[in-house]
Image (cartoon, rainbow, N blue to C red; front, side, top):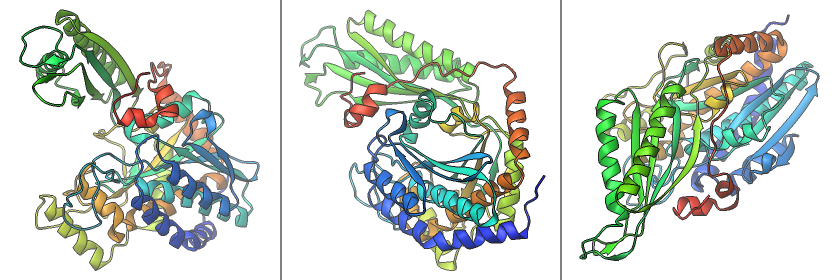
Length: 465
């Protein structure tokens, strides 16, 4: 049984430092061209080119998913470790890399920092593979390019298509409000579009068949139930299409609902109840109805074996190294986002294994099939995630220290697993013990044709699955 020694850490440090400038350049390249889920054509080109340049064998569009890829480098017989690359942006969050809100209507922006995740995790994989080759360690390092994370779709689609089959360990990273290894659940999620189909006409004429009134009646009902019977869940919605002007009765109204709870067994009946409420209200108000699910996924299945490996690797690398200028920019940005005059920024490297997190991740579903370890890097608590402020930070050099630290830690963790392949069996045993016979089927994955053939239609709210 091998141990992770100074020789191994030194090899990782050298290989990672040789890649640092390329990784940072890719941070900027992806940030400058934010692409919505399913439309990440240029991001895939840049990341796959980076990996090919360093000897990885590229496979395009695995599973018949156009903006996915895999890139693999094998150094001999040993564990198969996959790093996850994310690279999609969010609608409406465009901003410059400055400490203030720009007047940029409607543009996409990296308000979740995926311009960091794709390059950082790819760089970690390259560094791990280069170090493994130098140290004579056998194994296989793969980067799985995962589109459409922001709608919790890409990894579930890849999982269904068998792209994750055969991997022993999954490693990834993400920005959040703490720096450390994550071994605790996040939210399970189900979401989809509920479409009401009425009759267009003059808004001044009284009558039935009003799609907007049907949708509004459902929203009132769901909001009431969310306060009373479903208060333990997070239930959110937006109206994607709801008409053009009051004097034209819209013939189609689309409501997008999301249900979150740590337990998928709680999410499912609540989501089903929302669908039933929509159908019942549509029938009552004599309008048509169509349900288009997008996806459903579980939250993370904790894995303390990988959590401890990652925490040790992060402690070895050390917390992010921000300059005084970085800290000054983050303080200005936090104030511009409505925060306090003092900067709240986690500078530790901990293992987070208690409680649960507020977000949903589609790699949560993957973690029920393959042991998954995640490293977080901290951003200021007063800069909201999924917000223009996070877009600004993602494009500024102040945002680089966290993902660079996480990437080097991921590379160290991968090499530690190659040094001691028994980690794989221990992580797998923990996964099987936590699942304990729980069914881990994904009940539905929607938008399958749309996200492969017409992702523009998804974002234009014209898609019909």
